Image (tube, rainbow, N blue to C red; front, side, top):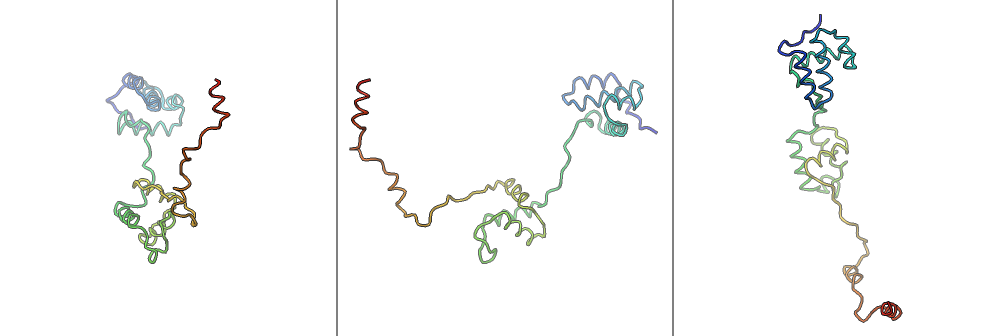
Length: 181
């Protein structure tokens, strides 16, 4: 037994909706259903839509439930997040306060250290890549200080960046060339 189509639409109405649709997939589905409204078989509608009979049945079910809007492609819900809001707040507090070397065993937070902290605190296994995405979603960015040589003296950079003395000037040969031109 086949699932009947809704009675509040007809073939010409679906063709008008398909013509005005901005979504190519929805237009193709509406045209296939219009063929069924005109008395065509579902096999013919499947050939028109370039799909199998089961997919045409799925289109009919979606169309019956939500109307033409149900035929628009939608993004799947995806995997649920690993951390809830309370756990994210606790993670943010730990990141803001920084690690305590005696307690956490590290001088600065790395992704793997935060993953270990989440496991020890919440018993949730999270990869460093996922931790990076979570932190970026919480508006944290990876910052690191510029490296500095351990033997660098305090005033060495200022001495190096001094401007040349005013008595130095261009060579006489270059001055002669610029006057001749």
